[in-house]
Amino acid sequence: MADEKCTTCGRRLNVAGDELSADCGGDCWGCVGEAEADGGYEPSLEKVTEEWRRGLRPNWTPPTVTLWRPVGEAELRLIEASGWRAFPPRLPDQPIFYPVLNEDYAIQIARDWNAPRGGGWVTRFDVKRAFLDAYAPQQVGGRAHIEYWIPADDLAAFNDAIVGEITVTAEFR
Ligand SMILES: [Zn+2]
Image 1 (cartoon, helix red, strand yellow):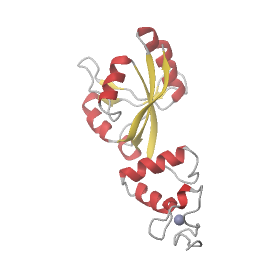
Image 2 (cartoon, protein in one colour):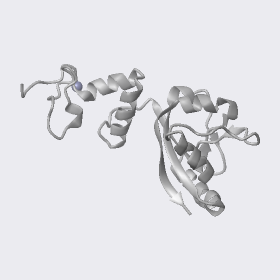
Image 3 (tube, rainbow, N blue to C red):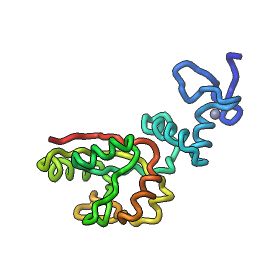
Image 4 (tube, protein in one colour):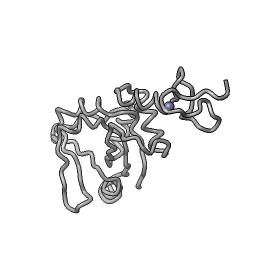
């Protein structure tokens, strides 16, 4: 049937070039994906978030917050060893884990602090908003410098709240 439509939104199903129109049992992937993502089904949340980032879902609000973190090479290798899923445990003299809310701030730290010390990388990742709600964003220095202070003991729970993979967005040597 060439003219089947989503029973929820009326979108024509299985239209070439419209990936959200894929038929998911009578409804389109556009509707089904958002319902599953908002329901917390992680594979759908990852896919829908990725589609939202590409501009395919302008009216959707992700239940995740995008964070960045500048890292040195040792931390980068440990993240890689986790399959790009988790940040390594803090060292005994590092009681706080600092992800930041602004890419520019992460770039500045990676470039100005990490790079002269063996290399700096900027990582980007999505964290469930419901988890972060327990922590107050901290403004440090300039207005655009906002970070979260996650106690080392909470880092395992923080890692569990990461949706999808940790990606590297910039490298400074
Ligand atoms: Zn639909």
